Image (cartoon, rainbow, N blue to C red; front, side):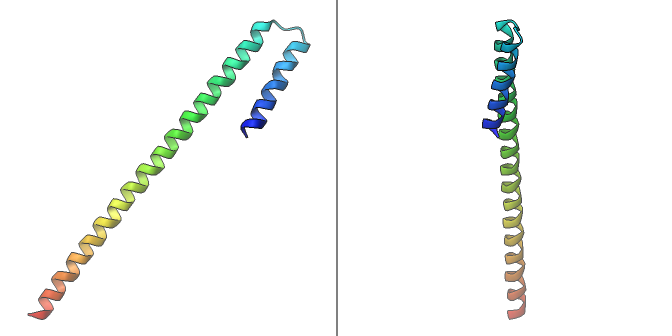
Length: 82
């Protein structure tokens, strides 16, 4: 995906060069590409962090639920012995 995007960007830059655009346009395109990459990287990082947090919370709830079930089972067995 990144390679294709970079190749596309190079094609856009070459397009500007062939049309006689100002050299500053190329720098603007590079800055725009870098900013876009940073936005995507940040979004991916946040998504991964969110999934990780949600997984940890789910695991904690599962562990709490299992502990509660085990405690209930112990109580039930104690009551059955009496």
